[in-house]
Length: 423
Image 1 (cartoon, one colour):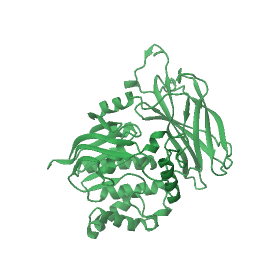
Image 2 (image 1 turned 90 degrees about the horizontal axis):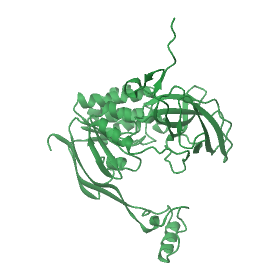
Image 3 (image 1 turned 180 degrees about the horizontal axis):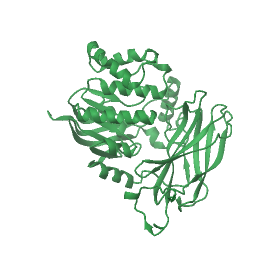
Image 4 (image 1 turned 135 degrees about the vertical axis):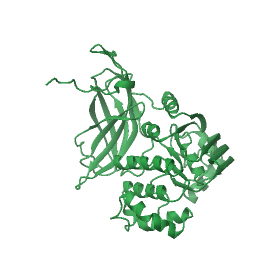
């Protein structure tokens, strides 16, 4: 295994659904007695099926086998629930496999979620040293890297502030800087960079490329952003329901992922069971979206998409705005639209409002939209309230012959700019 960084052999990870109690001894006793008497569990969730109560076994990973060479940058993609995060947790030794073997050649620096490994009561400086110690580094080694970590994270002013006062973006900056600069042979990154600003995301992607090509370190990267996967990775693995369905060329992997119908096209989409990122403020939560002026999610060039968004407020809130980010099937952002301030939200009330999206500059293709509720504070800093990644999907379909020109997205892109004016 001298030339390998990771070897995974026939690894499976099994969970028992409903095996962990509801949080109190009283509730667990009630559930136990109900099961013994063959009655419905009084602590079960409304609408849950019987499998939940029978401790049904669930394979998060099913007979996964592959090797990763030293210095490779490997992307992991797949739908939600495909097993990506479970795989990274196994590699990071957060949990152990049910079956199979995992061989790791070197130390691993992992970043599985915002603030992983940080103690909220400690300062940024203290957390850097604690993370380094966990990775097996001496104080002298951390001292040598410390200034580079702080400079990369752009945290000079806040490094002696307790991290419980950090924003989610500050958490990510410092956590990534620690993982990237400490002396580990393998970097494991879940999709947490989405919290940072675009400038810092580019900085992180550049750093991951540098540590692989210049330092020979192995990078494991999970993302739903296909453009960053294409930009960064040399190889890509596609997971589907816990199994590896593809391992090879990045472009082929992305095409397979997109062809598997990951994004559902439907006029009505409920967000009730969609994962809402915990690191956003969430005083207002999006509940559902309806496309009002179509029956099949297909539009012609120039049509407006009319939608109705339903939200629930946990607090009285004002000056909340909506940002809609349109992405193509490769998950590259083609454009962003902003709303004016939405109607004021009242505590414990549901609010619905209608809005329109202009598609006049989009050419033929498949698209989806990310919805972001946000506001700007008195300092002009944007605060994200809630985000839904695939809030809506639609197709633009019109005759390809426009002004006697055949439009080919492969070289023409998906955006048609305004006509050229002769001067």
